[in-house]
Amino acid sequence: MQLTIEIPNQPLYDKIVWLLNKFKDDGVEIVTLPEKGLQEKNDLYFNERQERLMQLRDNITSGEMPMYDFDSSMDELVEELQA
Image (cartoon, rainbow, N blue to C red):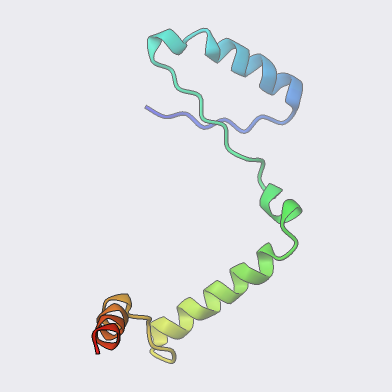
C-alpha cells in the first residue's frame, strides 16, 4: 500500500517522519519527494526546456520532424569505420 501526505510546514513534517521511523522494522518505507515548485526555483531554465521538449514531442508526433533512429545511425557509423 502507498500513502501520500502533503505536509504544510517543517515542524509537522519532522514529527510525522519521526513517528513513521518507529515503524521501519515493520516494513514501512519513507520516500521524501522534493517540494512542489522546487525544480523551477533552482533551475532558471526549467520552464524553457520543458516548453522546448513539448514542442519537439509535438513536432515528432505530427511528422514535422523525423525521430532520431539510433540503430540506423550506429549501423552507418560502423560501415563508415570499416571502410
